[in-house]
Amino acid sequence: MDEHAYHWCNRLLGNDHRDTVLEITFGLLQLEALKPTTIALTGADLGARLNDRKIGPWSTYSIKPGDQLSFEQPISGLRAYLGVKGGFLCSKTLESSSTVSRESIGGLDGKGSPLKAGDEIPFIASSPLAKKQTPEWAIEEYDAPLELGVIQGYQFEHFCKEQVSNFYASPYTISNNIDRMGYRLSGSPIISSRTGIVSEGIAYGAIQLPNDGQPIVLMRDRQTIGGYPKIGCIGGLGASRLAQRAPQQQVQFRPMDISEAEIERRLFYRSVFT
Image (cartoon, rainbow, N blue to C red):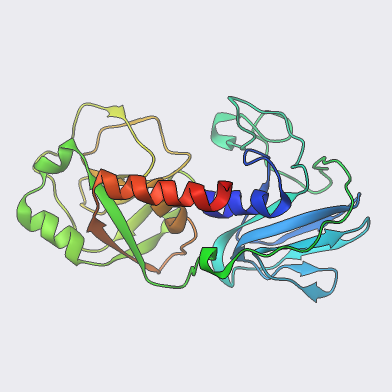
């Protein structure tokens, strides 16, 4: 969900950028180490503790067998990323080790089953690495105001100027109805001149406007097709920032052209892959 935190997790460990990490949403998890390794923790602050010591995100920590790593509840952000040196060893489906329970694919068993008490997530033991921390400039502030750039799509013409002005001028509140499929927002309703379209493929970050006019931002596990008009699409890095926001936080949209999105993407790749 948050590729920024995911890639920094692997970079801190010197892993391949595609190595498997554990995404922890909302916390309330306890793990016990069975082998020595170095871990990296990035993304949300979920009140992590290593044995009895509180530890923060965006840093690496040495782990020995028997160590207890626990996560409480969100302090800032929603999703933490836990990596180990060399990555977790999980089979891949469609070149991904992600778990999609709805589709019964991925995960430890390849059938989309969520992790449960007693599961072992395999990895290769390794000697401790020198401690590393994410540079300050790369650490996201999940409690800061969130402004997301929107690349307008061809269905933009189905929204009148007044509706478009309202969309960009009005802040939206994240509703309680959020998951890996999409984020439902509440605020000034934006009504399209068309109540529906022929169902078509949906891009990551697309902003659908259903009949009630309340935006839905489609996320990683979105459905493959949809029939609501779309005013535009936020970039992947914007969607990563949104994925760390909790219900009742606010979002503001602004216009963004493709060239700006491309520059943002290139700068991000340069920061994590060089």
